[in-house]
Every structure is written in C-alpha cells, then in structure tokens.
Image 1 (tube, one colour):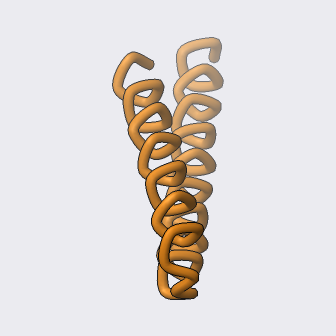
Image 2 (cartoon, one colour):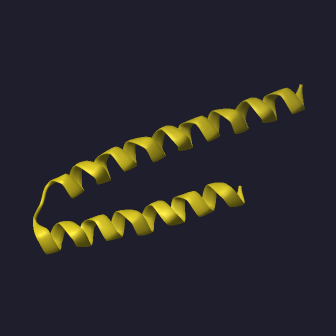
Amino acid sequence: MFVLRAVFLLTLLFLLALGGAYLATRDRKYLRIAGKTIQVVTVLAIGFALFYLFERVLLFA
C-alpha cells in the first residue's frame, strides 16, 4: 500500500511539472506525455485493485 501511495504522489508531482512545462513553453508534447502517464497510472491502479480484490476473495474462501 505504501508503494502505491508513493507512486501516486510521484505521479502527481510529475504531472504538475508537465503542466508547468506546458504553460512555460506552450508545446503540446507535454500534454501528450501527461495523457500517457494518466493512462499508465490508471491501468496500474486497476491492476492493483483487481489483485487486491482477488487476494481478499481467496483469503476469505
């Protein structure tokens, strides 16, 4: 759980830095990188949630 929180905190800081870079340069590549980052973190969160769910189901049974 600690690792997941750390990943989300680092992701948030990374996205804030990308937002600042976009505002400073108006280069859309930073928005594309931010979009891909959000996609990867979403897949990671769904994978972790499924792992946690299956773990709880198997331990309960």
